[in-house]
Amino acid sequence: MPLGNLRDPDLTALLEQLRRDRAQGRAATEVTGEWSAALRGRLDDNLAATGSVGRGEAIPSSDLDVIRVGPGPTPRLDVLLNAGIRGDANGVQPTGHALPSTVEQWRQDACTWMAHPHQNSAVVRLGLLADANHSLRTAATEDFRDSPMLADMLRDAVSTCPPRLTGLWRKNSVNLKSEVLTPVVKIARWSALASGSSELSTSYRLATTDARYLDSSIVQDLQQAFADALSLRVDLDLGVTDDQVFQRFGRITVTALPQDAAHRLRAAAATVRGSVRTLRYLLSTSAFSVDTAGKSPADKPGRDE
Image 1 (cartoon, rainbow, N blue to C red):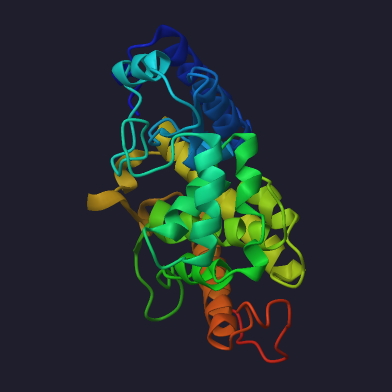
Image 2 (spheres, rainbow, N blue to C red):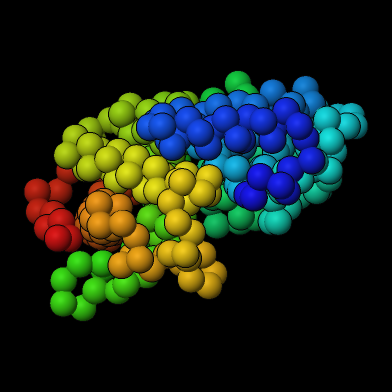
């Protein structure tokens, strides 16, 4: 988000400070955490942030996803949107009527989504509930591992695989958000819910995953891949790294990056690609169906180099 696009002096000052902090080496997770907290602190009490803002992983150009947890007007949200904060283009806003509007309705509907994951965008809606920065998100963990949602949410998580950025047939561009970060976010959300955890951040979700769902080597690899990819995305968003690496539709030209950044991005994409392939295999063997969850097949495919 260009600094001049914000019409809130406090948020503009914070954005400028975060840019300086990041340029001086502050951790990307601290930058996203502070920005996310600043937005959450400006919301009305009858709203809860979800998505990247809810998880504490938002960058300044991230959409602000919010859900209703009670009736009433939302003047503070209106102020944020009028100040230049971008609302969600897919309708994750309190003015929509497709989502529940009270805590009780969220809890009731969560049970229906668990039982019927193919209906009414149930996987997406349960994900919004799980990412909500509100105590109601615990409803997303109840009975999750014993429901059909266990396999369906994993199927959604591994539906996107990063392109190969190394080797003879490598690509030279990648969508950092949709092809690298989002698969890790979804895998971490799934594994946390399966493990009965209501953690929010992707890193903590991976850390609290039961070994029946992700072994420790995959967890560590995904944590590193996510950290490296998020750091690059923060730097690009804040202008710490030259944004000339961007192509159309948000794709990044890998060879236009500084050498060390390109190396980390290639490694991150390879890690996510290998993890997605492994989980696809386990899903194909019904290792994560309701009846056989927790059983670890002896044979797994090799990681993508």
